[in-house]
Length: 207
Image (cartoon, rainbow, N blue to C red; front, side):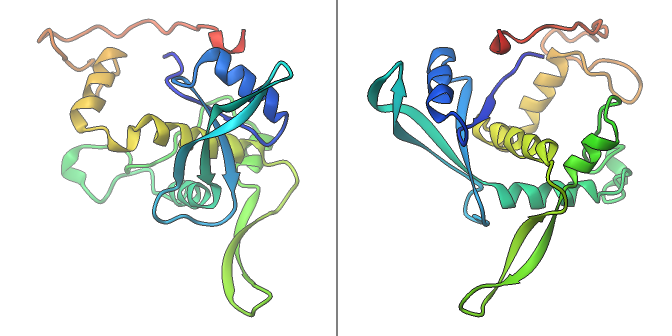
């Protein structure tokens, strides 16, 4: 699978990020800025057009910036991590896992898992005496969690949350995803596709 949408943090070397995003194209790359707190209306807002400095030249409205309510996606991630592997809510559907269940790759190690769960949601008091929920670090390194949050934001920007079942079935057939019986689903041709051999491709985004 190629990269459908890539979110990149603008919190460091902002000008360089904008320049690279413009070079690759904003159709594939989404510069993002994380904000604390919850946005229940929409976890991602934008894009807004911001000024960008490219090669020492200031471009008005030269970049598109998306704002991400990181707390919303962190809460979703931890909720998904607590899901039972077996989808007991709808056994008739024949699904092995509940919707949202997070599948971890085989290469993850203890450090990566600690980074993924490096924060906790706590209730704190504001200066005015009100209570609010806030994510706080349990350890300094939390890059795995940040990557998960921004990847989730990229999927939101791409529109994956609004895709129909037919769209997901189309993608499954396109990449020859096998079903529970080990057969790839049909799509278009009316015939069962053979499972494709896994290929490793280097992303053009990384040069």
